[in-house]
Length: 566
Image (cartoon, rainbow, N blue to C red; front, side):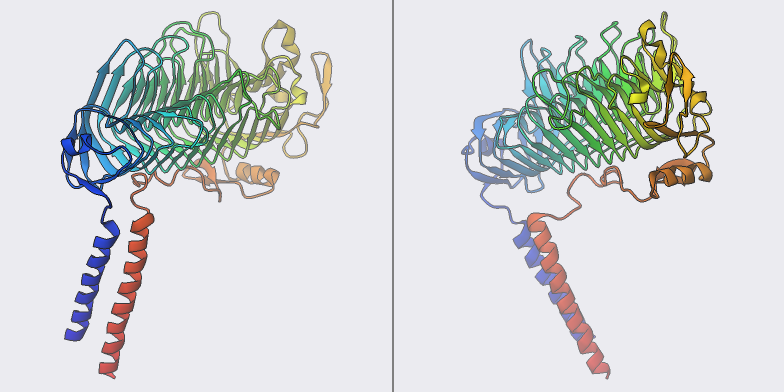
């Protein structure tokens, strides 16, 4: 027994040695604000104590600062330009900036070009009042430069962030190519205060990307997002190519502009708005879940687009190879959606004046949808005949909002220009309390040919839907529009939907539709703070070596004990 105890004690001592080795930070120790101020711009440092920073480091920092688990109390951004690496620290305090000019701000850095920011938690509140070009984020204000790409991993914002320009929980905006946000979390309220009709956006992870592609993976937003013009639970405005994968939004997304602004003000559960007039852009949203309510409706205002996943995809946004503007795949919206002009359970509006169109596959909407003009459980309004909605289900109820001079059209799809039979609407299942009135509705007197009642497709089940619909001077066959079924939300409807899809795609859980086997949404929602719970780097090495050491030593103890017993 004593021998076993001695071996266990030895194991603990060995593990403590591994701990020291694995977590020993490299470089020069920082013990005070003065030490921080005097850092060489390309040096390697670590925090040996909690410090207070009231003045921004003005050199362009290209070195490494390891926070070593310490806390920095800030009243100004730590760095003006952070192009190196900052990791493993917490910021707290308050940053308030008032200016009539451009301002960029974040708790760690005003701006970063190719910087690496890892495992940083911001608890500071940040408020910036300036012009509408301000860029403000919980961690960093603006990401700069074409290359190298900035990487933000395992970062968490818990502070409320307010700006008169672009604003995000992690970053205000990105002006670099292939920026990466991975395993990041926002818990703070994100507010854009600029009432100008073209004001910049607010997003849970970042506000907008202006010059290059952005990838957002496994990120989670729990904070409310508020903006007069454009707001998204994960991304406010994707002005260039963006890929959003395995993300979850739990915050409410709300537009607040009381002016009768143009209709491209937008709110989305995952992405608020996407727009570009100069280059080719593609927007892909996959495996994402929105649980927050999305509102682009101001009482008495007939403008504004809202979508449970994407609010508004504007002109000039398209993939160079396919022409498609947006792909939404294996996504779920559970939030209520309301928009003055368009409201869709999945997408509000896709402009589609040239080659832009949407492809929606394998998606679920359970949220109620309301609009003063156009509402749908899937995509509210689109112009392009290549628009495709397949293998999807909506259980939310549609309803009309009251705005003087507006009439609500509650449809599977609303459109202008192209004939509805050119669209692909296939294997769509609806349990909406009989609130969807139309298969399609055309906008304008010259497009009444697309005003087709839901009765034209209701009950056609899985053998083809619109069979020789005759009306409005034409006949529609079932080549593109087929298998549209409405019924009660029950096991029978789910079975039909899975049969149509050719796989066990959907299931019922606690009275709601969920994916049967597909994993969607962020793994960070269930309490993971955004990176610290998954060992990486030195920590992973420590865990692995320590585990092996423990197994070997304790195993030896047990074997020895067994031999003595024998």
